[in-house]
Length: 440
Image 1 (cartoon, helix red, strand yellow):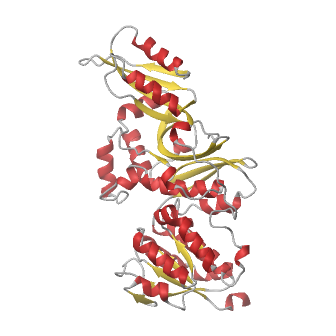
Image 2: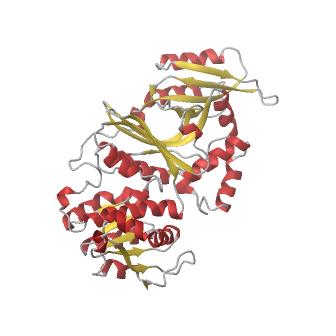
Image 3: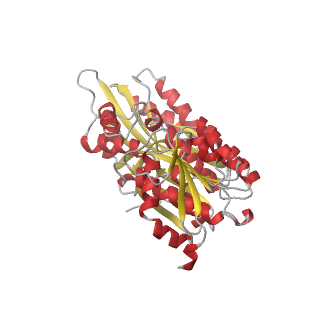
């Protein structure tokens, strides 16, 4: 036990919201266990917060209403940024770096948008910026990809990385409810914000996928190159038709490497009912990663919440504490690779995947043959067709088609031709379809 008697590592926490209070509670409750792991104590010496949080006891700590006091405090070894947002948070982190402090953050937007700049500043100052809690809450997916799979070339990764969207799709499928109805419940339960755009339009998931893709492939963070599509247009009809064909609709973040480059995309996706990701329900998160040596692997758990996220924050604090006084050349690179690649990031038109198409047409002889010819002429092979009965009053017939893999540019051309048909009644509903390699 003598090693635990070494000088404590001094921690300053900025932000006392849900994750901040959870972090204080975990550090308090598990202080002895953490000290045994680290070989020295972790000591909170200052907390910066605009207001107190009744869910944690801060009486033993120095509390300031100016979070920059924590970044400027010469006694703080590690600054924990938990205020959220990007403007003030970026300034706070850069201030801490300037003063020679390691930084731990749960802020995926900050890393996805400004990580390249922050990592460069940290490298210049000889400190590290850690961000495990920014992706998938309590699931240690960053460390797993960055370190645990270091022997592998990553072929692909795919995940449910936004619990709010997954809760909405689960409720829509299991209880046959409409999107707007479930969204209101998600807001009432605190899963979705008053403005749910970041969750339901895929922006939150895009931040996380940009980070995962960078550490998987050793490329700079490139949020602007990522294709993003949300779930607000998913209907009960598409959920039902997908089910009849043996699929569920999940909102996935997908990164894959091909000979042409790296693809990064967030969108609703049909996955086989027997696949692992199809059976991740409610607010849970799951990420699958496939490496050339290990094959497909799965990481599942709580993607949000006070203590699950605090678990990841504290793990990063421990890693940062181990770095105090150690040579920077021995540290793990922030985006996994000390030498980054200039590998191309593909536009969505270059991506190859299978598709679900729902085509609304007038009930006329020969219309299916016309559609089939358009697809064939575009080099698109059909896997399955489901033709429903005409609507009793409108006479509109839904035709559902599953295709084999094809480049998105070819599908765009074919969809344009189908929508131009005289028999076509509405824009074609198009969802991407993936067969992932790990099934239950």
